[in-house]
Length: 234
Image 1: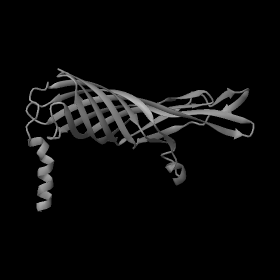
Image 2: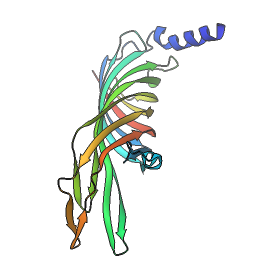
Image 3: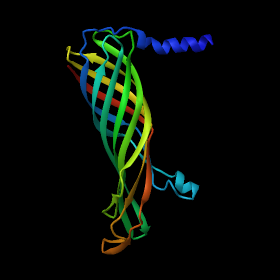
């Protein structure tokens, strides 16, 4: 019981400690660039075959952009933020339906994460350097990008999902209205979406190619996210 109580007080400490820099401005707009280390695209999540169901295409090391609006609650170490990112990533490979034919394939996804985050400024922070942690939840809207033999299978619906995220970061204040942030974030991003070809066949290299409908797929991002942002306060 004593250990649980101590952990509870430690968790509340950032909330109860007065903000160190009372002169800070309350609102800030934060354009961000981000880098994600890994994600998986599952082409057959509904297959009755467990091997097909578990198979995935690894898509790693890609960039995105985002924008956040943050509000620092006066006289506290608490800030609240709402953000939206845009991420588009694909990978290219080939398939060989026969020894004499190689077909190019592009597979990937685009997604817009919309997230709400609560930030806690750690009390050891000073007027220039800040150290913070945070966490929250998000809604994710995306679709698969799939091309086979240079023919695109268009999305038949916009996928959506919900998840949580946690982060830690440091900030460096250059002026009273401008600062730079660096963050490391873990995001549990998942969504499902469907694609379909408009036709069942196409001509590629003077051959008639059968187009198999991709159907429903699932995207899961479980890599680390590194973010750099510039905060404009007012």
